[in-house]
Structure formats: structure tokens, C-alpha cells
Image (cartoon, rainbow, N blue to C red; front, side, top):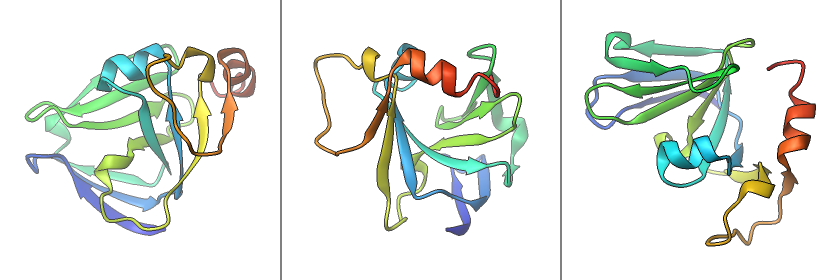
Length: 138
């Protein structure tokens, strides 16, 4: 998928993404669930991301390896960005008109609370597996 444009709820921040991976991930970690009140459904968007209205973007250093960005006006969650690689993950909900999306992976499956589950058949990675896999990029 190429050249996708989106914005926050109030339109103060506009984002153009050069390449969106239609195979999205779901993160069940404590930080993602606290950030959005639910698991984080994340579109992998790489580094070809252009943001207009950056003065309205508030960035929070949520961990040693990533920042989270949101609109300072309306609060829309905009991205989770790896500090080392500069790669963006953005909420699936920012892209309401995309076709062919598929849940591909669930991260921190050992931290998924018992009060929800998904029927999708996906790969899953536990906390230990995630940290081992991303050791080079964290």
C-alpha cells in the first residue's frame, strides 16, 4: 500500500505515509493497554512518514527504546516510534478506509489479560521472545 494520508480527529496534525504494511500487529503490553485503554492495533509504517502540524504533536518517551506521539489539541494517538531505527507504528484506526488488512502477530501474549481474546489465528510472541527478537533494535 502506498501514499496513504490521514489526520488526527481535529485535523491539526496531518500525516502522509509512504508505505503501510497491511499485516498489522496487536500489542498486549501494560504500556500499550494503559496508553489506549485496550491493546494497541499497530500498522507498521516504516520511516517514510511526513507530519504536518508538528507543533501540535506531543511526544512522550514511554521507554528506553520508543516514543509515543499524540495530538496536543484533541489527544488522538498518532504513533509509536522506535528511537534507534526511526520506524513508526501507527494505530490501525487512523486508516479507516484501507482494504485487505490482516492481523498478523500478537506481541506480549503472556501479558494479555483474561478478560478478552481474539479468534484470529495469528503468531504470538511472549515478553521474553519479544525482547530477544528486538534485542538489536532496542
